[in-house]
Length: 305
Length: 271
Image (cartoon, rainbow over all chains, first blue to last red; front, side, top):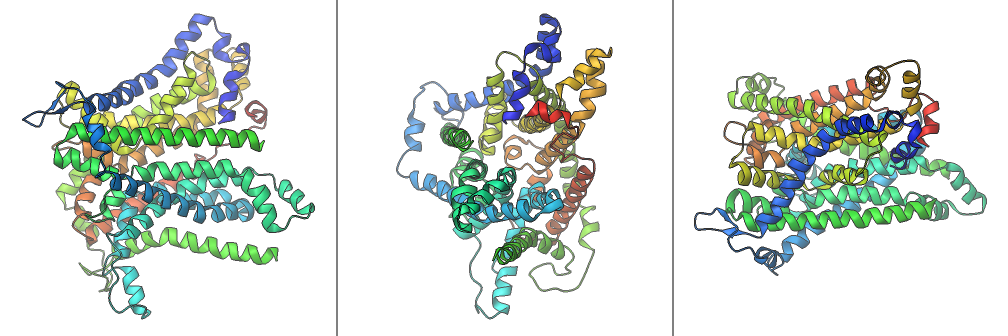
């Protein structure tokens, strides 16, 4: 990130665009940046603003959205005690997924960085390969494994661990397994980048100063790779919080999350203003979470260097 | 001692890699199972594959998916690459705001983006889902990813290379075409591939914006999965996995995953 900003900060005279006469440069900058900026403003910012507008409205007799009596009623409903468990459920799934991904991913990232040698890129590509494969298919593959007559139950019975199939599908466990499987690559990549950038001499210096392997890890490696851990946590938590596919496919009708709730309101329940309010809340929570994490990240980076 | 830990860690890594691939491998194996239902292996068959090509609904969905992905890749790669290049190389007012504008779509939950576009088209254009709506939606969630990938590469490029070309008499356009573009080409390729995979795979945004006759492959697959595991879905999945793996291999060979600069001079400029 830091490197990305750098070239633009170099003295004006050394960048080609700035070297050209001011007006031409400005026109050229506009031509380069404007299509993308314009697109995102029109098709991202405006629709997002529209969610907020619609969330203030209500339904008329024909189930259409009406803004005749704008109010915050839908938000009051969103924070109704009835809805709190759904919200907590989403946070629970996302938190457990994040913790598992970090716990499973850190040793892997560490191993690739320290022992990967010249195969590092290949090993990272292998981690990312499932990520490039359809998320839908990856989730589906867990149904094959976890259903009552699935692979896991067949193995358990073959080894005589159970006689009856254990119900694994449509449980919290299946959702968490599916999410962790889905988002683990998101965690491993930033962890790897962070660990790989760490100067091994720093650990060696710690060891020279009589730190045990564990102490060196706890007091040198871990603090210095904290930015990577925060980034990995963020990259897992955010998509897990808003995930719809996993809770819908691997969790049963009893599994409620914000995303599932929104989808039902929009595609079945037709209460769009309320759905819009829930969507807006999810957006605000996501943005706030990211902002807090980025703050931490910046502080860690400044403190770490 | 150290070697012991190394061995434990390697064993652990092997297990995790195994678990990462196990579900997909199982899926592939079952796409060749004769049995329609259940786990029992009733012999090897290739029958499920030709059946896919006789399934009109599936082929229609695939056609729509490819149409949407093609448009999404072309448009998002062009405007995303320009945006990434501009952010890495140009100074302009509102740069910070543009950075934010680029990053927010990437952290926005898919479901929020999906419903926001649904409301946008419904409220402003009275549109209830169409192919055009899918094009626009898919381009929107792809642009940021392309821009970020290209910006990373362009930022690690030595700006003096372009200056040198200008000094040697190249026009601004000529310098871009013959110096900048070849240098960022791998990132543009990687960005385009990423856009394709995002578009091809998308379910959530699509489900909010597809209309009658614009059902995509993920929508088709999702509908089938809801009713359980079938050999047909196993076979489609296997084809998708195979195509993805081959595409990544090609991209890797083409250098799409090279993030760092190859020329040593650029290190100084980036760091």
